[in-house]
Length: 77
View 1 (cartoon, rainbow, N blue to C red):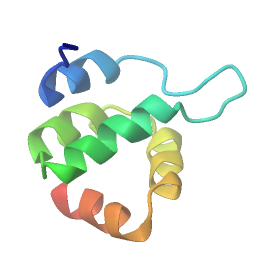
View 2: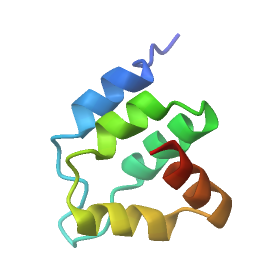
View 3: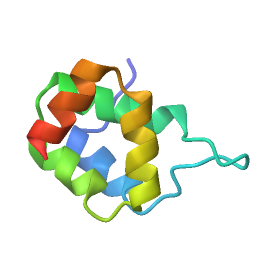
């Protein structure tokens, strides 16, 4: 059985990591993490993850989300 980290622990781990690959593209893991937090309406973890993120990274994240998830993210923040 694979053990997964709680959302807040993942947010704490990823908030200080580089969200982009060597080509400057947003890492799929970031999108997956955010979508999981959105699915749980976990505002605390989302705020922890994006509070210190660079504006360009947040913009890239918003661009990758579908419109409903994008709206939900903005509402939860």
